[in-house]
Length: 97
Image (cartoon, rainbow, N blue to C red):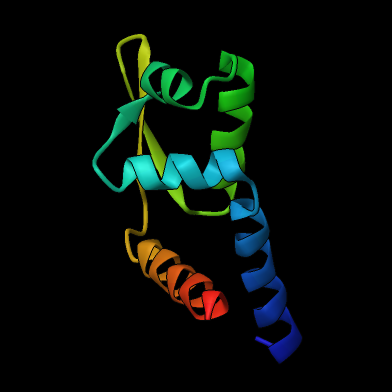
């Protein structure tokens, strides 16, 4: 894989996370799987908006879904994405000084 392609792929993943609501979803899913209705209640957006955010995260390979009856449950596909959150927190702390 050419070097530029590798960075483009990384940028796509970072772009998928570049929204406060999506970051909230990732953070919530770090505690376990959730159905869309639970995420909707937590974020405070309508169902279609939450579904769009989840679709962006799913296309980026960050979350996965599983249908159970009428409900769709989401979970983190790659939990190590939380390491990135810890890194961001370190940057925020460093910027305070």
